[in-house]
Length: 81
Image 1: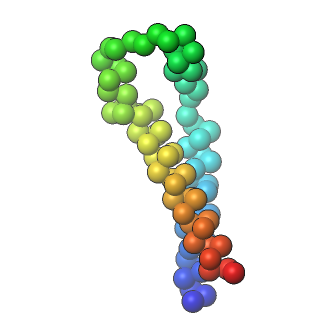
Image 2: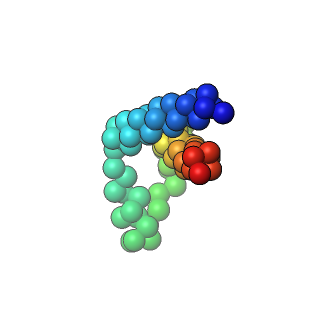
């Protein structure tokens, strides 16, 4: 059981470090906030294919690692109770 705890803790630390790095690398999306407030939207090629760009992929990885971080936190709290 101690081996599983150690492995989960190592994975948790790696996920946390990668999540911090990805968050710091990303650029701000202030244009999306402004368009939400003003109600304007542009329906161009870039906005339709944002998920395929480098920024889109980084955003998806950040969300995925954030969910993994939360799940690992819950699992580790169960193991250490």
